[in-house]
Image (cartoon, rainbow, N blue to C red; front, side):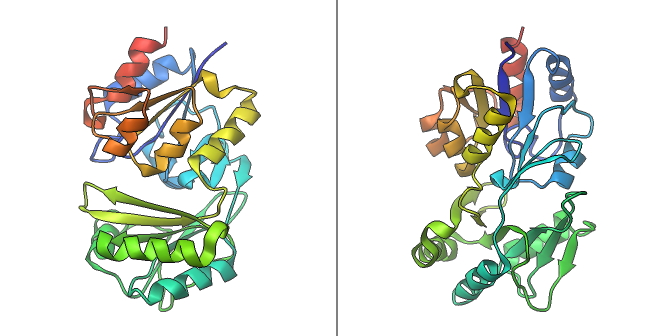
Length: 276
């Protein structure tokens, strides 16, 4: 029976310039017929396909931190979203901290197109990200007033830890088990991300969906990651692998810590050596 391998993208499989190296592309496509290969990412469907357009993707994809599981043919397998009312309430609470989120929502269930709403007030980190990485993104819409959407996939805050950590604790206290709260450092931009999701929108929850869809057991699954949003997925797989550049908290929970980083094609080298 073929084993299942699932990798995170940013800082794990992708190089730091957000590209797939020719080596990783070659190894992936060579091994895709000998094993089950897929991804688990915070990225959306459209961005994932933009990055991975030259890879063989024949299995369900875990997207948006686990809020969505879908095939590359846009078959929606699992979806967990926040209501507009809950999104509005979260945004109101965060306004007391002087920070506002990006609101990423599912615009169309058939095309899996997303909307990407930008708040009118941006801090330095938010402004830098939009101007340097999303200036030409057709999903982006600058709002005069930022609000929740009907099918909110996630709310994303960027900023300094001294603001986002108290905010994350406040939101956990106010909304309890009605939301999933993830606070994680972003080493390349020297800031923090705070992501608010549906309580079943975790990579671990989505991995369970994939296991059921494929009729697989977690003991036959290997996952790769580097950051906080990979931790629960590590606990739901038979083998968990951290790349060399992973956070220390992630390495501490990994079955294996690679010698190579994402920029050294650590995941691809492991697949090359492991899949016969």
